[in-house]
Image 1: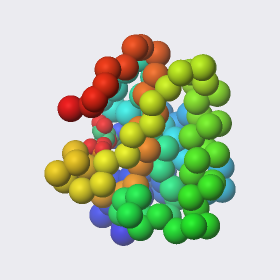
Image 2: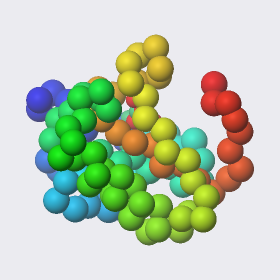
Image 3: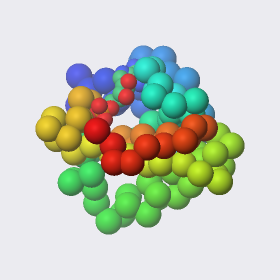
Length: 110
Ligand code: AMP
């Protein structure tokens, strides 16, 4: 899936502001941040969305999100969002969790 933007970031072919990595996941700052902290946590393998997330990666992805929240200094309060499908707002079809923090969040999201 080397035509995938986020696969290219995993491979280091496209630069990104990485803030975390482990054997399963990497995390980098969103290029168009919607909050003072806006980090994307993605699996290393190409997985199109949360609908295809295997059991073997579900726990590691959540652990990575927890670790990024601590490292980003927002462990007290943060929001995690993942969009599945264009109708829900997905624009990059490599699974990513948005970690948003550093400001008050509104509900419901748009
Ligand atoms: P979504 O619309 O849920 O698929 O989210 C895709 C996110 O990827 C958006 O918030 C974009 O700003 C972000 N994005 C796109 N290209 C890059 C990039 N090269 N580096 C970092 N973030 C990106």
